[in-house]
Image 1 (cartoon, rainbow, N blue to C red):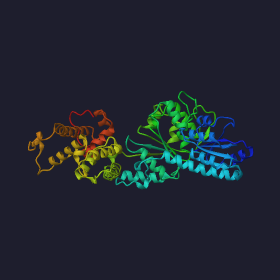
Image 2 (cartoon, rainbow, N blue to C red):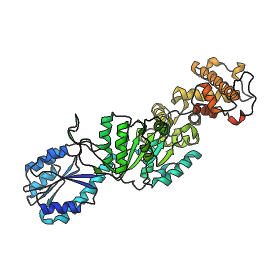
Image 3 (cartoon, rainbow, N blue to C red):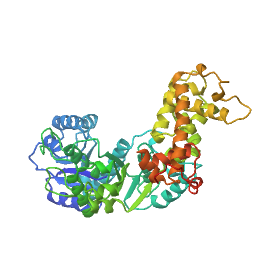
Image 4 (tube, rainbow, N blue to C red):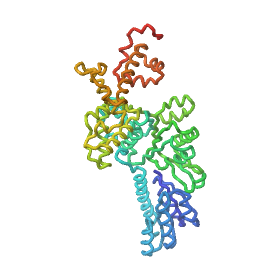
Length: 487
């Protein structure tokens, strides 16, 4: 990230030497008037360090250190002075001041200390930005998947992790796009620099502009302090733009300019600030369609879509569910201090059978909820929500009906009154659904889009039903059409 340093140095030679020696330190140096109030300057200009040359180290400096510690950015105060009073120095440090440097050590030694403080400040900010739990600090090496689709996805992700190219992550809501973006960042060359996420759909246009690019004090109503934006915080690291399709059109222009010029301008500022960031963006929408509909700029689309990755939905990689369940159980067991050691086979089968419209996020929530209400040392089917328990019973009933040695529900050898109404209703609906889509595919000779048009659903829904009921379009291609078919 960029470190902002406010400088108030009366010695012209020292001032020039400090500026010259700090040019390559990823630091933005801002001169403040010698006669100005330091606290006012620190409020008006966001800063990490304030370096002041003073004649006397006294009570005013102690008070300044205390007041600066209360500012939102918690800037560090460094004094350069000829004052040799050890008591005042101790009081200043006790008040929150960072260091007192004697003029006698010379410019090079002073700059060496400042460079050390810059590195410490970077570490301090990084630890603040990246303070996350285990699930939010992944690396690609942490991932293990059994499904071919995710193995191929990760193989490509490893290839691009070291790249500096912008990345567009596509996929349905809940598939873990930010989680994977963090893993790619942590596995690449910028791993030690910040990863700064911004949700482009959660704020108004004005607030989002400030969130991305920062603002100066007084630039709009309520801007009582200057503020750094995500681009400054992510300097040398990665900025993650979630829900990029929701970015307002005017901000798309500003984002494009920032990518092209590699510099940003705060709201209300006159000077541009150079930044070095890798951009990862994500959306669950068809961004190409948004371009064609004139809701998203084509030039910005191509700037973001240097490399694209589509994260497969969980229903298309059911083989990965057992490993994900084990990971979530382990994580929540630590955070909850629970005694749960695993999950029963029947419950795991139910999770594998479920279609997961909310993807990995929904699975994590289900495991957390189940562990909260579980009264045993293993998660059981009864700990799941109704929709999963009902589906499990439906599959059990279908297995019974397909077994010639088992009693069939249709023969009334199984008492439906032993089932809850919602369970019996679900069984009936599933049988109707299977019959409907089978007949529909017969009528359309396996043409997915035509079947979707007739059913009034998305083609993906037809594919989901075919997977669920083990239907294959090849089986319908050469079947005779029903006499009443209009296809």
